[in-house]
Length: 293
Image (cartoon, rainbow, N blue to C red; front, side, top):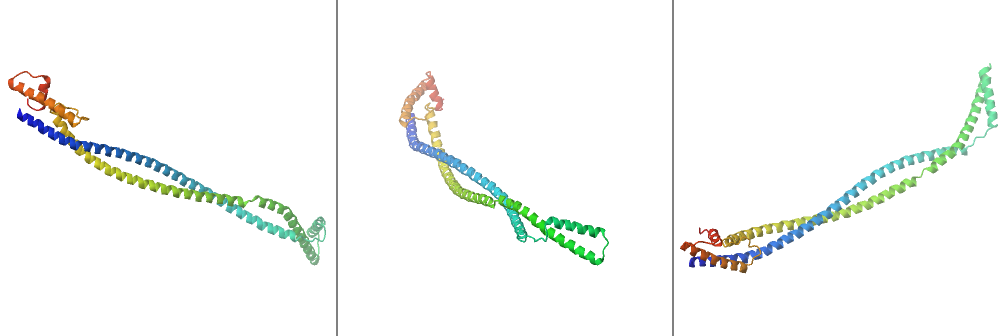
């Protein structure tokens, strides 16, 4: 029995050493676990914020694409209207030139038309000498020229108002203002995009730094876990010899008290076993747990 007493003392010494190692490891384990939880929470927050920034950047990029498409359409419309305006201005110059050079008619237009019709009828129906025919042809040409100049003048007089109205309806400043407004908005959006990209880059950098920290703490937690679980496994094996199945939360002093009580049961059981006396269930169990029967 002296040998058994020494064994109990050795087990208690080993358990005390184990508890001295396990206790700080458990503290370290909890600290590392809590720190990892905190870091992962920070990483989730950064990722959420980063995703928000990315969504905002995508919206800004799409808005810029939309504005650039709109700008191209307005610019094309501006070119068309500018060309039309230039054509109208050119036409207006021509019409003004015509109006400035108002033809001086020898007679009223109606009399000139009647005279022209009379000469054309003579030319078409009468037999005449070559000399007279030549003179009539010259008169017809002269009258036609007078009437053509007069008709051009009257047409220009009517048309110039139409051209002026069309010209007044063309407002190039509207297109210029729209294009200017779009350019200003594009500049503002590009500036916002730049700021968001800088923020996203900082968040990405922070995310990588936290992930590196998580990696380091995870490695340390794995190391501490392996060491702690190995020691706990040895402790649990020693305690199981005394029927202690759930040592978690028990201090060494509590365990020591249990073992000393159980060692008395073990000693009593061994004595009964030597004498061939019957054993209680507790005595039988502790002998089995220690491999003594």
